[in-house]
Image (cartoon, rainbow, N blue to C red; front, side):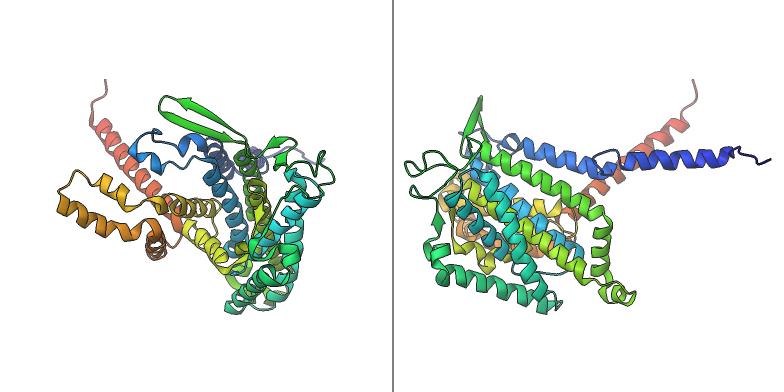
Length: 427
């Protein structure tokens, strides 16, 4: 007769594994750490109007507040752009210098959808993702025949060709140098009253420019409909990026980055994986382009210029390539410097240093002024250089080092307290 009893030790060892597995899959398919990270990003995004306006509206430090709609929208939209670029560069190691082409193509697709069909942003955003994905499939199919610097140069060439076509060749479609924008005489076949008034970008009637101002004492907080739409889209994109990073597909992309040649020797063809990553990354860029049009219904060819591609590279490396939240942090930092630091002028510096003697005040203003205002790019370059030298993992690595330092100090403090407790006589 067969004994069906279970060894208690086997059962005991199996239970924790089952519980651990349940814990790993209990939170929207995310592990506990990833789920906590998602909650942190949700909290930071939803509370951004408060977090980005720490100073009273009338104070001298109010110029450092970043909680106004246009800048908050840029934070999340370029965060989406950087998240998508990180899927390609951070996971596979393929460095594209032409991702602005997909941003521009998505923008043009969105504005044409608004001109022809409706000012509702949903069809525009959907079409921008689809068109950018198709264009990325074409560019990736050709560019991924090469790797390394040759791949980078090919993507840059495609982006510059796209810019040239949009600027001067395809002017009936792109508007050339002046770009495209919504006009009163646009067909907009799904919009009632089209041809009589210029509609505004909206979400089923809710205009993207509508805002609510909350006044609490000397603080002013703005809640903008367009920002929260872009923020929700970014959160969805961030969640999908986490799932992709943790999936078997993400593991294959990491294998490509680790040693593509060895992967090919095993009999696995890496090209379908890299092409899929390229297309997904391009679709994220198209999504960002569509959202830019939803917030500001005007598109120009400058979005395809090589500097826009270089900017997303800086964002990703500065925040931490291959990390989940790093590209978002990098995008936020660069856009903050571009919109806040660049507005500081010599008059503001004189106000800051007015308590000093005149000679010393003028000397400090002369030293600091080249690094702010129009010279904000110099400050960005210095910051980028310092990050590359001392924090190759970007801002995320810096945060991890600070967290480890605090944990080490806490352990030392806890160890000292426990030693003291051991020496005390029992009561």
